[in-house]
Length: 613
Image (cartoon, rainbow, N blue to C red):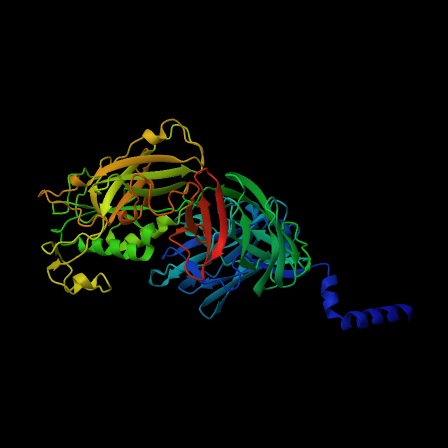
């Protein structure tokens, strides 16, 4: 009777508190996937019948000791699979086909039809423990029929770049392919794990490096992962060596599913001096409770810079009034200029028309329009904006600016100056500096642009001038026009010897405007206020590393440096404005926050955050 009473009491007690029963279980089944909820579903395939091995790498320290009990993955619509499929777990990805001899577990999988495709499932009866060194888990299928050469079947994916989230090989491509690096895709595979999860646990992942200005606080993008059994509504963090700490409210909350995540921004502060240091960002609390995750910290390199390097790919176009296909280049440059403003840097070289001067071209044009990006061939005018955007997103290690000043009161001579600094020390770099002078707004009533696009498809602010025009188009304004360029291949003088990181390197060119004449001897300086200097750094193999445009000559000071009534004050600083991504802007827009950086003649730098009224 005593034993029966105790058992009855326990049944009554635990039945009355189901939540506590769940927390007292030795382990519970949880799911793990690199494809978090809300990600857009995609697919991948080669568009023909073939065998596919698809796997993921699991080495999260928070999953060490968990037992893999099964897996599940959607099969996108687009074809038919062979009836026999397999699921597997292995320590390494083998060169040969998967079998019981080269895996820890190898079982048959089932595929059930579902709306929009199918679902592959498998169970591992004995379970497989995830050790400290991690495992590979995946499945093998054969696509026996593919509809309409479908390239989203049979591999279920999402976009992403988490390392280890997709390994792939096929019968026709038998070597293992890192799908994350090559395709920027991740598998939608979900593992069923047996694991005792802590209640409040979060890990954090961030960029390897964050750039900031001296003493300036700027946001860095991090990802918070849920590794606990409850949803995450808030986290409290600290950052070593910078003094940054705070609490982030996460809306919507991160669901209570292992691996679900949210994107957050954490402010990091640049040092008082230039250089790099390693900092640690740690999640201290989750929902007001201590973080129970053993991997709740991320290391990040904080690089403090004199100014933020902006990547401005250089566009060089070869064109001519006689060229009927060249309106495509004119439109491409104008569209990019309208969208990107001063960050879009271009030079237009006119060939055999009234805008060609006596300068030597930096390259050759086998046909027109010919467009180069950083002195490398492009796919043409139609895809220029896309190519420019892709190149501009790459991290830049050379900061570059350009400026102009008048050398005489008659404003017939200009001095252009380029200033650069590098983020790394380099020995014998053999880099070269080059500066061109260009003019905007050139026009002449007699200039007729030959046009092959009359009556053709295409519309828009710029295209309408040609598709709705005739075989000759008059009245165009020509921007980016090359006037003077004495050293298009560049000179090595500023970089003689070695380069020291964060030190300024400068180069000057002087331009006599009387030399800016066309082949008929007529001056091409139509407006002395609309001239600009284009500076560039060229690598030893002739590729442009970065470029920059000065402001207009109308705003340039004269050689004395006097540009306004306050210039006599020796302590007047140079003032520059940056947005919170570090990109230099012309000024702080009304009501918009910005970073103001003041550089004094003695080298002192001050910065603050402002909002103009």
